Length: 196
Image (cartoon, rainbow, N blue to C red; front, top):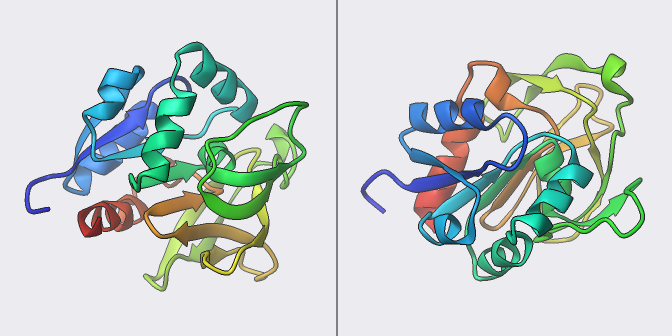
């Protein structure tokens, strides 16, 4: 792909504008996506942070859950941050009864693993061997376990918690890189989109 990839940001809830800005800084054409027709017009999708149960319910209401699942199954690149990581997980711990995800990444994610809103924090961590980045964790999940095809791209400084993963064209972080002004995670995703 030689031209700027068109990347949608799921605009049902969460920090949509911040992701759009970071994607544009990374060389992509970024657009909000709320409807199936808008989804069909993009090369890739970002699922932002927010609240995963609310996001799931809104995706059902806006008739987006199944179209996104289908695009992911067909190989569309997708990136999920925080609640977006939960949405891209095949399995979740600590979800509400009946909570569904988009799936795609062979991992188990624990909701609100680092604690409540008052337990939010920032930390430096190495991301994908590209150097240290500042990571903002807000009621963040962590990855309990991954399947054999999942690449771990980042861990907490102590090394005990997985907070960034990739499986093929799918990327997920438990933190919010869109809030730091550092677009390296988004640049990494744009490079991924160009590969597929």
